[in-house]
Image 1 (cartoon, rainbow, N blue to C red):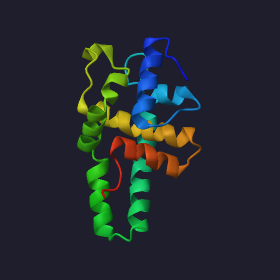
Image 2: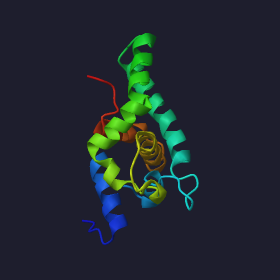
Image 3: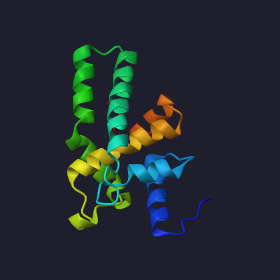
Length: 149
């Protein structure tokens, strides 16, 4: 079992526990949890762009698998991939405690960056799992960003 030895390791371990996924390369998770600042100019924005697309892909695939109408699929995608929903899921699961925040903002996590962090985590899992959508779908379920039952 992995025993965290630093504050950074504790954040990474907690994030892995929340998303129910163990990274093979924790650098991807570290990048996903990093907000943009003067040192990390892009922060997690590139992974968030990827994650946003992957979230939509997986929701559309699930809708098609369930024989949902295009309207139903569009509604689910709109609801589950909007920034307000993603931010709420990030805060409610405890991911805010794992984020490497921008010190100039008093280490406070705002909804926009929280939504980007959730997207970035999905993108990082997609990369780390070698694009295994079934694995990513499990992480999305752990985060509550999955097709409604």
